[in-house]
Amino acid sequence: MCVKTADCLNHLAPYLFAQIDKKRDALRDRGIDVISLGIGDPDMPTPSHIVEAMVEAVKNPRNHQYPDYAGSLAYRRACATWMNERFGVGLDPLNEVLALIGSKEGIAHLHTAVVNPGDYVLAPSIGYPVYSGGATLQNAHTFFMPMRAEDGFLADFSAIPEDVISKARIMFIGYPNNPTGAIATEEYFDRAIAFCLEHGILLAHDNAYCDICFDGYRAPSILERPHAKECCIEFFSLSKSYNMTGWRIGFACGNAEAITALGTVKNNLDSGQFTAIQDAAIVALSGPQDCVEDMCRLYQRRRDLVVDALRAIGVECLAPKATIYVWTKVPAGETSESFATKLLEQAHVIVTPGNGYGPDGEGFIRISLTTPDDALLEAVRRIKESM
Image (cartoon, rainbow, N blue to C red; front, side, top):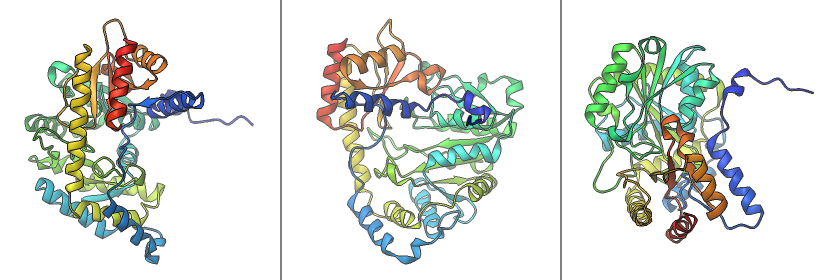
């Protein structure tokens, strides 16, 4: 039988990180020692007090039934309290907070909630692939907003043509930025909000890395800015802050109409996240935050280790003030793909080619810091030898 798939799948690029996993597994099957600096999956375990909370929550028979579609009220209240304590942002947990099965799921489903076939999604030209992938699955178009190093990798929405603006439904930005590590100013957020209000566009801010900051920097929420709730929805994840990538828990908050629309999609497509995971997430958000501070110190040390080692062998890179990545230029004469392939085949080190994050990512690679120190040093040594 020949299965006929949706036409949109023919326009969807293979998911970047699934490809990386496939290459890694193929080499390891051949007995080759591969060091993966490709995917941002924390190597440290989830803090024990969160795990212990999960164990107790799993034992509770009430959690064995269907969860609330929007998330338990207790979880949404914990998210709202965290937003108020962390950013000074007041939220109504009933109408302005929605539980997610990880922020990736929420970002993808936002397209279904807001975008029609033929519409435009405005995405950064270096960014999380789901921003544009979600548009493709809706048979919509993506306009990539230019991002340049000389502008601090801030997506330039002033470059969007008028005919695209008139058909745009969502503008995605995310700072601290994955993959560049760039951070945004208050003035940039204010301009983005004003632009979206002027043109009737939903502004979606991906804030998954707000807790992983260095050198005294403290990442903001876009909802802190004036008039933000009039057009903004913001996505948060517990994955990186608490080493909970496999747990799949996050939340969206902000504009009530956007939250309702996203919740309507989720009501029809999923049954919510396991309540026991929500209970453990409450403990993560409301409990001691020493574990987050410890992770920041760990990643800052690894950042310094990698940046110093790369600079010592002549590789150009900046030291990011946030995220778990180092964004690095490839050597002269190389492309993102050719250099990543060279490191894979000759050094047995996996890095992510920058062009996988969008057109302006060409000429860069992303190195993840979610690898133990000794493996990071060994990876840099191998990179040096291969060059």
